[in-house]
Length: 226
Ligand code: E4P
Image (cartoon, rainbow, N blue to C red; front, side, top):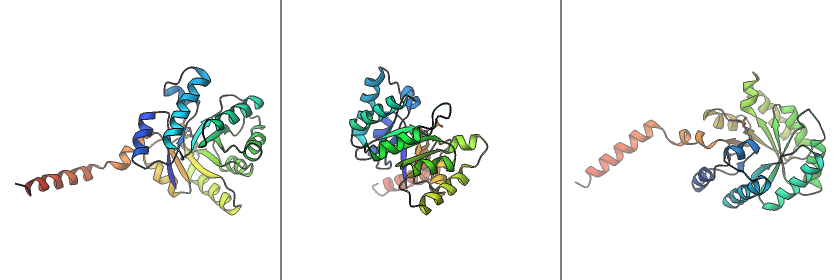
């Protein structure tokens, strides 16, 4: 079980990686945009290589920015060549439900030796089929599933059962965290990994009663030296 950071914020990655509590990072085009990346492919390359080097050998997911098959394949091979720990994110299907992505996922994993994180998935059945296509990671967007009125925990349990039962190699990444509690909740329900924005980690660490206890210890410790 592991926590990944879902961010392009290098300072936050450095901070939590330094604490030894994260085991990878995930990004997507929206995250890169929010973190101020500009300059097209060169901007993306610089940022992703900086993160990849910082967290190596832990994995960094980098998402393709196109839906054209040839272009996706080209980008995937290029991204994977930037660093050994880069995993390429491919969406389960195209913007209008085009299904060729699965063929590309299988090809990248088996022919080009590229590790793939299949992304933007909202159900156990989508993730199961992505795992059947040999994906290394399957990303279930749990917060978005809950937003639609479905229970992501049910999807997660079904999915973990299917992957274990069929001995598939794919690891489940739960994304779209919406609150701190999601992290332990989803890890407890079958996720191999939860990827979260950095802001949800501090409340996992800092507790008001721990603060009070530490203050008391320090105060009494001081008294011992009077
Ligand atoms: C995961 O890989 C995705 O980048 C992410 O968790 C999506 O989160 P959002 O639903 O908050 O955009």
